[in-house]
Length: 300
Image (cartoon, rainbow, N blue to C red; front, side, top):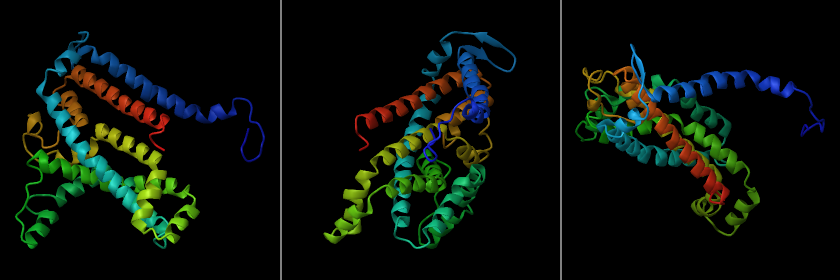
């Protein structure tokens, strides 16, 4: 029944509207997933495909690059998730009933989100260039020595995390603004009359009431960690001349980038598929954990 007209909708008309996306998701989603699962049980290269059972899964847990990529991914998550929350919450607090022309600011903050990630990656790559990047130029102007941003994971991964946080700040801001819009303004006004400053109102009223949105955005940020590829590729690709032959010299080895190298550099598609399936179950566990916490009331 339509919520506005009160008219009950019958027939197959509603299903026809979702049919194109359902077909596309089945072919390019479920179909591709099933093919990857099948390929993970084979030793597949450009020239051959042989069924090997669980050998790929056993071997990837014995490989050095798996544990190295896991360390890089966790380090990336330790930077990205707090950055996403801090930036998005700060912007939403600033725009929500504080700044005039808030709609204009919301549009401006969304511009990075609709920008090409490859272009953003190249932009940050030039900004953090060790020799002529604007960041090192500014550091030298105020008395600091230049930083070799792309030489070590300790410096390269935070840059990539900041890049992703800057790009997705508008998306997170919209999520939190939507949650804040559902808060009864009278509650905030009553706290203001009682003498609570803006920090106290934000900490004791707004943040507790938008906890479901915080849980949701934290989950999205964690899933982004395991899906990050294009910004890493644009940032590190070609920095070192031998990057196409040696995996371990890359300063950023998050899991999705390692899968790309194993599959499309080493042509070991079976191992790459097995690692992708493992990442899928990690992401699924995160989603189920978030749903469990919200169901138990952890998000309220």
